[in-house]
Every structure is written in structure tokens, then in C-alpha cells.
Length: 182
Image 1 (cartoon, helix red, strand yellow):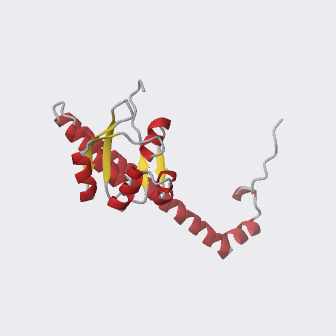
Image 2 (spheres, rainbow, N blue to C red):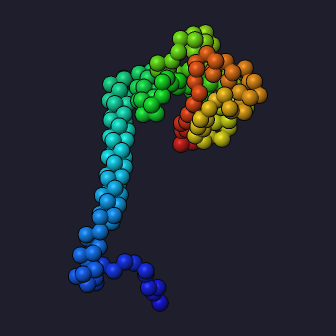
Image 3 (cartoon, rainbow, N blue to C red):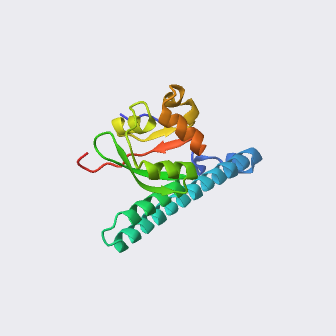
């Protein structure tokens, strides 16, 4: 048994006078044009994003193929492209050491205060309340729109408070890359 759909009749099913009325109705035409323009703009945006991602992937693969087994240039290329794709002002790539510690692997366009602290102390053990700790525990993407409103900042976690004050960062995207075995 099939249900009858309540679709509009096709142009072929309309009487000529109905068809002319539908075609000549300016509001219908304006809506159609507006809808088409929105759809076109969305398609262009998606195409642009896909091209940006493809370009970033190509750049990283080029660096991998020319790095002769060195990871530092690969980390720097990955971070530079991720920072650009996220439209972030700066980025940091940290490696999880497995015992709750994170080691600095690369920085991109980071504020001087953050660079200095990371150079002096390249390994950190953030608490579970911090964005690092939460993302590490859940193994999920973490996006915090306003760090000053985050639970770690409100609880006055020293690392989070320092990070917000020293870098001026408000939004944080934390993505944990996992090995297939993780």
C-alpha cells in the first residue's frame, strides 16, 4: 500500500492559466531567486572549505614526504594548517605522554608569554578539571566558546586562569588525535 503524497502538481499537470499565474506571480519568483541565491552561496562556502582542507592536507603530505623521518616539520605544518583552517589567532600542538602529561611539540603564532612558559616547562600535567584534562579523559573534541565562563576558570584553576590572562584567549578548540590502538 502506498500513501498519496501531497506534492504540488507538476507543471505538466497544471492548466495553462494556472501555470501562467504561478510563473507570473512576482512573490513566487522573488522567493525562488532568494532561495537559489542562498543555496548557491552555501554551495560556494562548502566548496571553499573543502578546497582549503584539501590544500592543507596536500601541504602536510608534501612536508611528510620531504621530512626524511623528522617529525618536527610535520607537526609545524599540521599546526599551521589547523590554525588557519580554524581561523585561530594562535595554536599549540601538545603530545600526550600517557601518564596525564602533555609535552609541547609545536607552536604557531603564540603570544610571547605563552611561548616563554612553554619553553621553560615543555611538559605539563593539567588537572582533570582543565580543558586539557577533560579532553584527554573523554577523547572527544572540546570547544569552549568563552574560557572565562568555563568551569576550570570559574574554579580558579591556576593553569586555566594564567592561560586566559597571559594569552588573551577566549575560545578554545581542543582536538585529541588518537592512534588506531588508543
